[in-house]
Image 1 (spheres, rainbow, N blue to C red):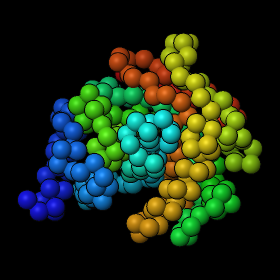
Image 2 (tube, rainbow, N blue to C red):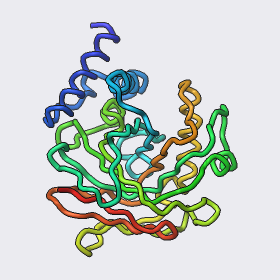
Image 3 (cartoon, helix red, strand yellow):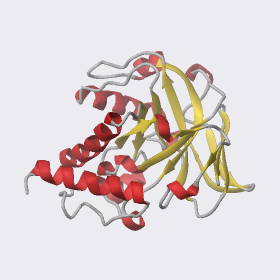
Length: 261
């Protein structure tokens, strides 16, 4: 089987898994553990398929921003996936659990860009200048791989295990929030299930944003004005096993709610 045929086969399998809500076996038996190129090619094929069907890309998510998770998966860098308009839900807007397989929720800081990021090498200053504002966000991750039995190539091929996301409605200029020391809590029914802060995301969420901006330019698809950037988890993910409301509070950015119906 040619590599092109393999990419087509795996992409179709993951797409069907998402459509049927039936997880499949890991793909790392077919994609070598260090074959990042093929894994991203699988992701891109499904992104292209969604765009061809009329879906709109609205930004990117950054995953694997925790050093502990990177070590667990045997990598030394984050990964990324595409965000589509159909993935976006409003604060407290009900999200049906029936469209998900094995969801988890994590709290993040999202950036919304005002300017394009097109340099070969970006700096903090470039990200600060290009960002219109930051908002609190909740990302709902979901794996099309059975039992979350993933390694780096599995999650990359699976669009970085992305599913849905919720943005808060309190935009804050980056000059008005401490992105490193901002404390985060993620709770359900008043019980705190996850804690963290901005430093949990590669030391500072802007480190993740710089990495993504550089990577997208390398691929010829730079981040553009209006894009949403989910910069990465501020604390441990929390499994979603039943209907209910998850609330994150991020110091300086307010709160946002993910409601599973």
